Length: 138
Image 1 (cartoon, helix red, strand yellow):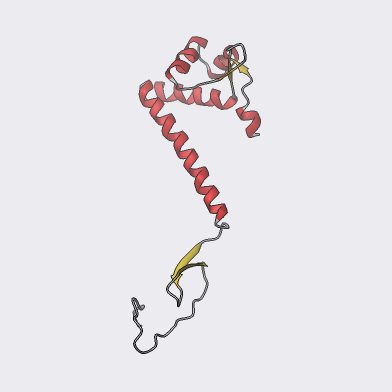
Image 2: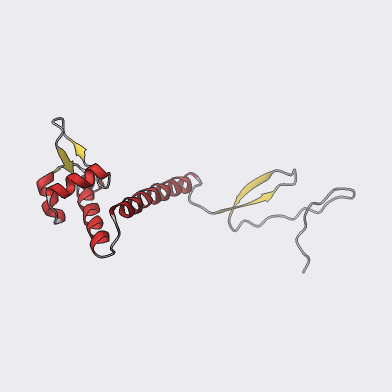
């Protein structure tokens, strides 16, 4: 689905009609960097369905919210950055195995990750050992 959604297959006239705009408006948005379509070898603009959805959102923000084009450009940039960061968080979570972990200090002093819910064995210090932290007694 994503491949079809992002495929640059719509000519400017079709994309403009789908977005409810004049083709000249799409050219202006391209010059401003709001919605940048891909180009054919002959330099013709080709829009994807994602581009058309962004054009509709630009129109909504402009007409219903009264936001100027510079503000809309910033909103689109922040939305794209947010989407990129969410993807990065998902990628990192998969690297961690998807499970939540906690960290504790091993008897040797190393910090190690353990799965959430793991019951840790308390080690009592021997005489003369330095204990940096002990949980409060109940």
